[in-house]
Length: 89
Image 1 (cartoon, rainbow, N blue to C red):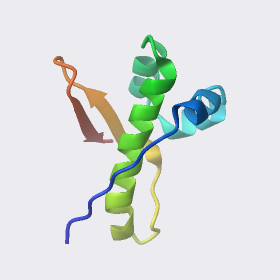
Image 2 (image 1 turned 60 degrees about the vertical axis):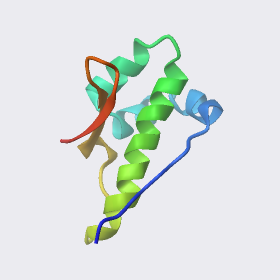
Image 3 (image 1 turned 90 degrees about the horizontal axis):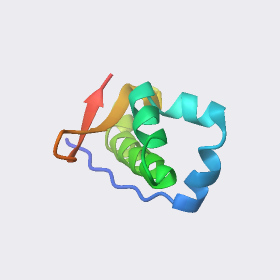
């Protein structure tokens, strides 16, 4: 069985959450934080990474015994052409 996940994130909510260092550090990898902090639209960038992570979580978490996982094991990145891809840490 293959799971499929889709998620939407409020940019306004992410703008608030990205100000909370504890949230950022327990949710995003160093590369995601660096990419988001250097982006012209930081909240949108963080929201994009979060939505991708949530989609993977929804697709795969039900396969785990705990039904959850550390969000940092999923890394949302972009290739040289700007296309998104997911890496399992």
